[in-house]
Image (cartoon, rainbow, N blue to C red; front, side, top):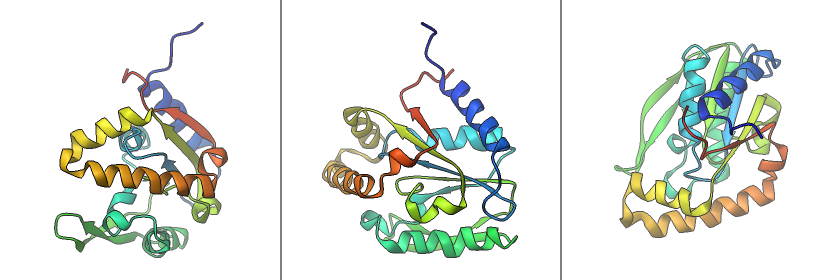
Length: 192
């Protein structure tokens, strides 16, 4: 049996797949990286961005209105600020949610590029299917995801993380996100 793929090998393979995929957002190849919080989406997005000549990365966390997260407004903000302008051949941008201040803050530009990465819970929702050239699902065991989240955000947010895990689980079940993905990735793969 061959050794498991490293995260670096997986990212390189996904970058190759994206380059070969047709552009579905104007001239842009959109890659969406979805999966439960703490599974490794942001890390994979950073790797892919580098491999795709520093492709812009949009973080869904910046589009949520705090812990309310997966309301229909998040996909409206993504569509209006990012997807529609890029499809029209223009730069996009959106107002970033400042979690500490509890309000939307500065505009984050999303320059027109041959590839754009959108990562976060909800990135691969049905609302984005027609624009996506590659839909990636990242998974990791629930206990490990929670540990990663609490390490990043602090133990005081444990109740929010547990509530959010229930919210995202219902979303994924209703949306069929994992089943519609073009690739599934193990978020616990060794870095390589």
